[in-house]
Image (cartoon, rainbow, N blue to C red):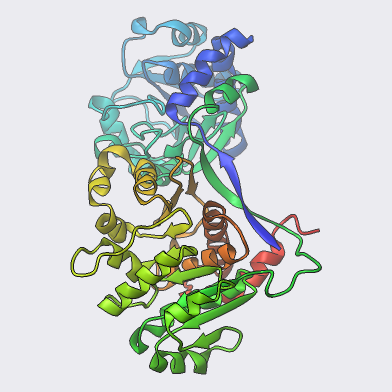
Length: 493
């Protein structure tokens, strides 16, 4: 079978602004969109909560306008609701002013002495906020951490940057539910914004499809990883047509990492998988592997067989000159290659033996520490630019696909395409799971997927396997459940 990732297109803050600006000329007035947005918020609240005293916290812009509409709809439905405003309502302009004019309930200035609500709607600031919260907004954000089960955010929790997920100035609201419009934004999926959003509901507010298409036409695409699908296996296929993945092992002290990678490559569907290792390490591998072949030949000899069309190097490789020479040999062969763990550290090192440049058939899989060693100047900019832009910059610098791992893994290509993983569970944060991911990607490369497709599908399978195992998993648990994950994928009939 061929496994492919399912991707859901995201909109950046600038793209969403362009969509909003284009709508009126396409026949949908901006006030209609605000009415639809506020109604959608009220609908989502009504699906999850029973009527209760509710304070809608309204800011000075269109996010506040959405809040006034939501308050009006809730009031019409019998909810005890009032609005609290950050700024004098006389300063409202445009659609927000009209939304306030249509609101007939009580409006209070935000203050600690206001009645205590049982539910709060955060309509202070949207995804385009570019400055830290201050004053009463900052006080409310601090309080939200202990009230988050009672907070619904409109667009994003106030203080979360819509593109980077950053909590501006270190302070942002927490919410149990975030209602956004048209499409999710990167900040909904990138940490710490992802942890502040709670459940995310995406509402259709009648935005013209043409407006969305125009906004997405020029910029490099940003996606969310939404799962995976599979096409049926070729009935005339055989092990040689499904590719041969070579896993390069180091010495006998660290054989477990390369075995994890090799088992994962085989489970991902590579027709053949071989570990090439020094003799003493090969003996250890051979005692513990059956379906995976073990060879103690020289790496150059192993690479001379062009049927070995994909390579995984790094897990358990070591950091000595022999290991560096192996990395050089693999890069010189220009096979589809996953560079992980020790291979990344060797590439980052300077010294006696320089490593050859990576190429466009490579997939680099650094975690945060490895990323900082590989791309120190780019990593230094992450607090300002965010993880998404850092991954894109690293992919351009390496001329290769980069999988920047973490709780919000980002996969990026040199041409600017990027995918944010919001599916993988936190219990993947344990030793050896990265070796399994490297093997999954290697197994998919062996079957002919391009590096970006293999990286996306590998991350999707990795997360699905972890969800199937559940909390308490160790890396050894992941390869055995891959068949069940593959069997459950849609699209095989």
